[in-house]
Amino acid sequence: MNTHEEKELMKSIENDEWTTVPNFNEVKQSLMKAATETAMKDYRINVRISKRDVEALKTKALEDGIPYQTLVTSILHKYVTGKLKEFHTKETSHT
Image 1 (tube, helix red, strand yellow):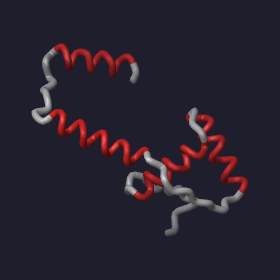
Image 2: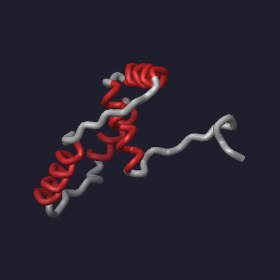
Image 3: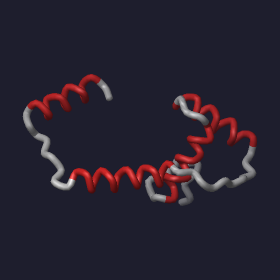
């Protein structure tokens, strides 16, 4: 978070804009279960991919400060959950 966001959050807390979740323990357990299931990596796949694409993934991962396997997993997860947005340029769009 940047300093501006932190200040806004603190101001919100100080202004009593937050309320307690009535069933906090139930919600907490549900969220913990979902986080555990999301983080669980219990299946391995092998994929053939061009060296150029692997190098590009490694470069992007390095820029983001994460291992490239984590980046690939994140991309796949975003794709299958519908959170990955396609970006079309004039060169890639089919009109």
